[in-house]
Length: 133
Image 1 (cartoon, rainbow, N blue to C red):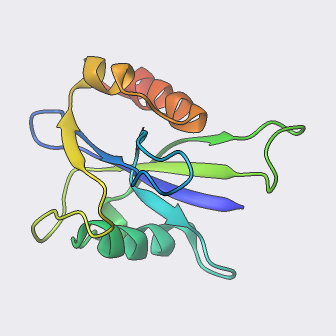
Image 2: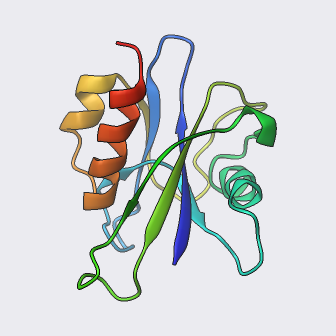
């Protein structure tokens, strides 16, 4: 199952994270916002759509930069998941959580300390390995 996620960065370098609603899978854990890619949908277009639905902001596809990916192991979860992570520093509108989960801005150390699903741990490691400190 292809999934897209966004590392939205503020001008101070902090990254927006989303806390999953407690009633959902991985409830209460922090993740990069995003969601599923629909059949036939380009991942970038899916991410623009998902961010609009989840955070009520607009993202210009040309501002999205691929950062990395994480996937479940071959003998792992069913269905298998591949998450594509993109970074962006520009958006339009006021960030508002539309699905009931909290959102917050965190620096690198704080992101790494958050309780996250395993794939988001891998994505955070890739994001900060490529980022200036």
